[in-house]
Amino acid sequence: MSWNKLVCNVSELQLCGTLNGGQSFRWVHNEEIDEWTGVFSKTVWKLRQREDMLQYKIVGSLLLKDMTHNKNKIDVKITKNYIFEELLKKYFRLDFNLSEYYTKWSEKDELFKEACKQFYGIRMLAQEPVENLFSFICSQNNHISRISSLVEKLCKHYGEEICEFDGVAYYSFPDVENLSDPKVESELRQLGFGYRAKFIQKSAAQIVEWEGQKWFASLQDMKYKEARLELMKLCGIGPKVADCICLMSLNHLEALPVDTHVYQIAAQNYLPHLRGKKNVTDKMYNEIGDHFRNLYGDLAGWAHTVLFCADLKKFQQPNISDDDKPKRKRKKL
Image 1 (tube, rainbow, N blue to C red):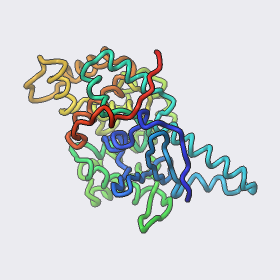
Image 2: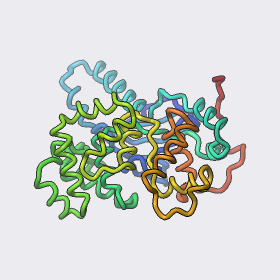
Image 3: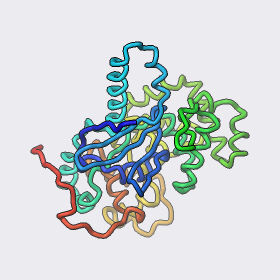
């Protein structure tokens, strides 16, 4: 397998903060060789970052099966390269000029201006709604390593095997129909999903009843708050998970999931009258979200993700000097 190249400056995409910030749970980082392995779009990817480009390899893909009938090998190669590059561009939302948005958000917020010096290139992933939804059901009252374990169990037991590489079998995320059978709840309980088993099976059955992909497409066409209310009709989906789905897979980039960590950022830095509260009430949840939407605009969820990453302890690093920061080209707005 040879490495393919996609022109992308490190200031526009930082893999660490983007892939390890709690958006997706299917990426593994090999620190020794600084290489990422992950699965999306029924494809196993390897990624590594260079100053002015993103390098990628396709380890295996179920999408390749649809191309093998073509006898013209040159056409197949061109088609493959085009399809995978476009998938990667879409996944990282590379059509957004992030440096321009960082400039706008920095002008509006001193805290963001400071945070973005180190947390440059944080991208909001464009994930597949089914995987995004069920991954965040798994995330409820959980930590990242266990969430990743539960997600992989879903894939292994209900997805399709993509390939085996270096002794590891990789699976696609299951289609929603595979999770909708009533027996799935008891099977998932045996696999250690606990109360989440009911939420997964019941939500899957509802989505199938509502015609799956058509329903998700309709949510993208709705206004953000309408889509959020529709998602909360699913079994086990509350405001935070609904906002995660809106933000990460339905293109409602103003959605802002509020958990206790986000509450602390807001109370300490923006809304001091909320300090010392034991629980985040519905009123507080909406107030925090609306504050950041008024501050940052239509991409408030994305902007706040940068603050979220900057505040996470696992990302804390020694201060870096100006000489070590990536050179970012500024364009006039």
